[in-house]
Length: 83
Image 1 (spheres, one colour):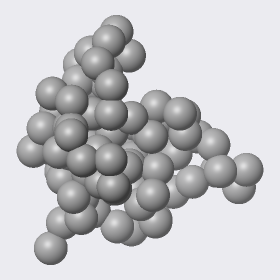
Image 2 (cartoon, helix red, strand yellow; image 1 turned 45 degrees about the vertical axis):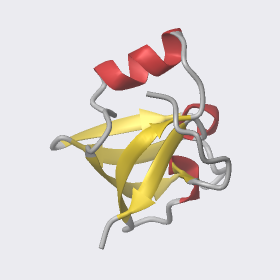
Image 3 (tube, rainbow, N blue to C red; image 1 turned 180 degrees about the vertical axis):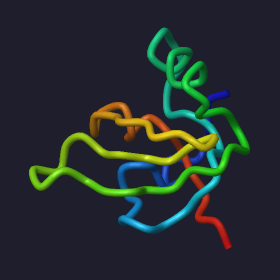
Image 4 (tube, rainbow, N blue to C red; image 1 turned 180 degrees about the horizontal axis):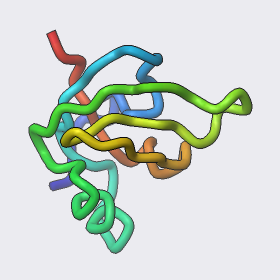
């Protein structure tokens, strides 16, 4: 699903320790399909574990496992901060 809001938060904006829910994607295509296969589906809870000192890649926790993404990939994932 492609999110409509341009001002929505994206996964790369999370700080280490913050949690969020996936709300959609900024684009559709093969990369978005791959992200969904990795567990980043709408409604999934995700936590930013850490960012590399250079800012890329990011380590996330999703569905009970660690997932590493590049910044460009994380920018495609629209999120809502978890309460």
